[in-house]
Image (tube, rainbow, N blue to C red; front, side, top):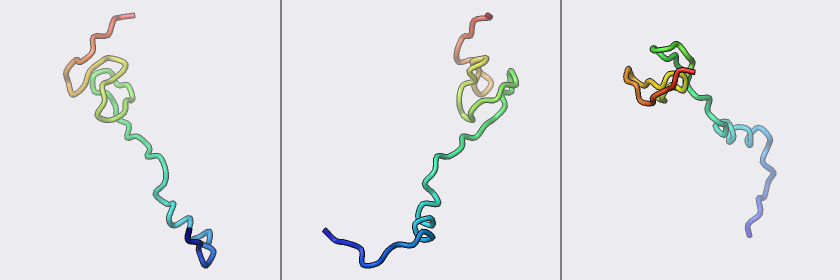
Length: 60
């Protein structure tokens, strides 16, 4: 198995790893109830998505 001839510097390793992270989800406000939701997802509070009711939520 091949071995590196020279040590990789910390700076070079950090440059390679600049994109290795979990992306932060984009948050949006539900136009129906005003709750903060992840963009392009059904609102867990009211069950609406894109102006239509997708999930029936019981009034608790």
